[in-house]
Image (cartoon, rainbow, N blue to C red):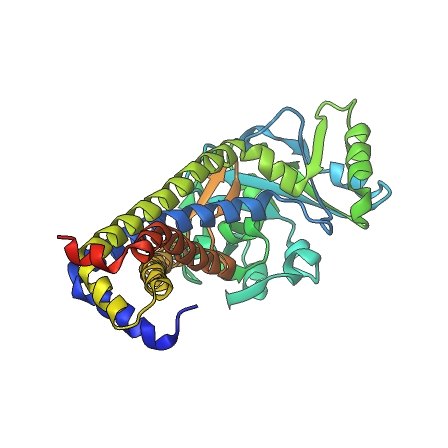
Length: 387
């Protein structure tokens, strides 16, 4: 460890070559910005697709259908689903999207029965209403409860009307939900959306059923029982856990995110090269100064630790700059990747912030090790003879 008083010497060394230090810090900041942006995207994918032990939600979809526009199921299926042992509740949902392919700006309408939102149901109990309210939504058939992310991205306010896919609604409330899928959709009345969606099948036709089981251990058995119940019907079903359904529907997005991991490693390599180059140049310029310090009693180990501390400070400064910029862009940009009506929100947590600072400091330390060892082993006489 380096004593605090020696940090003043380290800072002085960095400020003596202000332009070089600033350019190095800026380069590290750009690389860490890309790294944190990639990590934020990966965290959003993990949150949306990684199953937890307490998950109890199943999605019942039309067999061999993927885009919501092609999945049509009779609404009366809900009565039969609710009678299956292990099913706590089943909600028919109509989904309308303006784009079924992967996109950064998709508007998704979800039509649900009014009693599922206006009443004390599990669906609305987990929400926080930021503006407007459920009462306003109940009073108008063309009203919508809009997720916070969608509202921020489109600049929507309570009382404002907007349209997409031929459906025009009025914002009755803005909600915040712990579920990623709720943050980027507009919840509307089921019967209204069935009639307004044009070719969506009309009244009595829904896209899917969201089923909650009474015990997480029964997820597989309940899913198999639902599919078996409708196997011989004209509209057979495929039932999967919600996060598994999101993972399959967003398979292209998941593959893209896997590829970006290589971009993240490339960013770290760039940080290592930048910091190492800056320290090597700095040490080369100060060979005679190190000889003077050794003459004054500075041991070679202390000089080596000071050089490593330079790398750590450069990494921390650049990492803090790039991480802060990335978190600000992610937070205020409200980005989300959507495919087939399902969204993956780009989000960053405190863990990503801590990871960025830790990695940038660690890379800075690693980058300073070789120059530090070389400077620490150099003899005083050799330092004075260096040009």
